[in-house]
Figure (cartoon, rainbow, N blue to C red):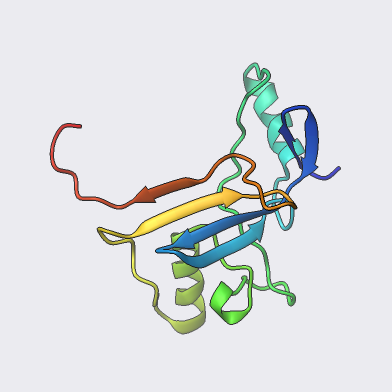
Length: 138
């Protein structure tokens, strides 16, 4: 059983989660591939410990894909599917190169995540956030 996204009466196979950092592609990993626990397993486990109803949201954690050899994925700039988690990329860099090369987010950085259907329409709407310094109460 492949994971599905339910959108207004139709069920769609999962598509790549598009992640950009400062307008540049950071990840396009497919959430339906390489998951240790697929969505049916996550839903079944959650349903054992709490009631789930229509509209319940189940999160899977970071979304990434292995490379063709089964190792950690590669950045988009190196021809891979990239990452959806900065900490994961930094960990892979540390394993491969002895240190992380990608910096943590800085004030002014913008992260955007979105999933689009095959016609290029946003399924959930984009989530875009700029890192800003906290200046007191909101």
